[in-house]
Length: 162
Figure 1 (cartoon, rainbow, N blue to C red):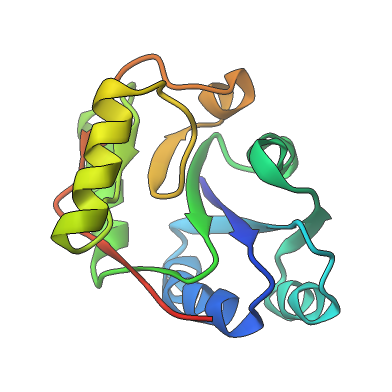
Figure 2 (spheres, rainbow, N blue to C red):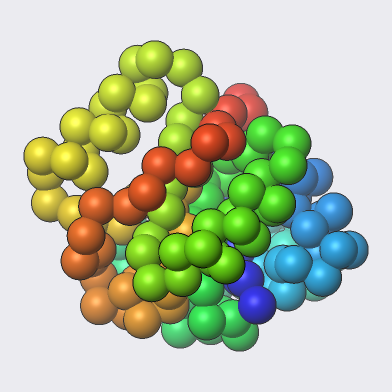
């Protein structure tokens, strides 16, 4: 079962956009749970998480990924920032990856040349830290970093404004 860990940035409209693409995956039985990690402690974010059945935590920074993972019910996680909107059919692409490459993390890259290049450079040449767009085992999130470069999936994610 896949769990979404979503870092909220204080804009409920951005979080709502992210939830809008996750809800069909819940209905299909692919996504089993969501955890919203809110650094600001925004009451509107908490209400939205509650209304969707997601768990709500108050934490910030890199600590948010770890606390969200600890709360996750699934063994695999998708890390998102509020406002991340994976393109249609993202769930089928992720499910295929989990069937064919179950030991390797994956990345749903940002759409657009600039964002995609920044992500690629950060993962290829920098520390392999946790970041939005990753699909990976819960154990890697708890460890705090990737062991290997993730496979770039053939679906993108866009950013909805707050």
